[in-house]
Length: 118
Image (cartoon, rainbow, N blue to C red; front, top):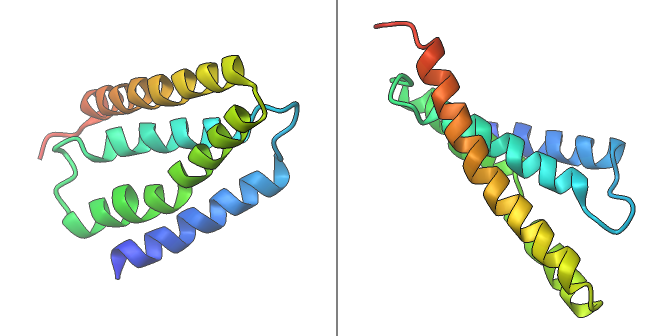
């Protein structure tokens, strides 16, 4: 149930953000920001300080799973490749993957620093 509730909230927030900040200029910046931000949250949540499994699952699996969107990322990259925008697709992939990994590491580091001993 925790994963389902988190997923609904995350997906609704993603829809809201994409509605308020639609992609423009041929580069899907909004999806990039959503995916990187979600990765930072996952990194923070999965630090061993989150000892409540239901809360961890609701946020990391449910919310972030609903908020981030690999499928939209994949469709956008495929469209860029189909349209012959190879350089933009390569940069977008590098920024998305690299940014997500860096964000997850930064989120984990921040959570470790802010962790209150049990």
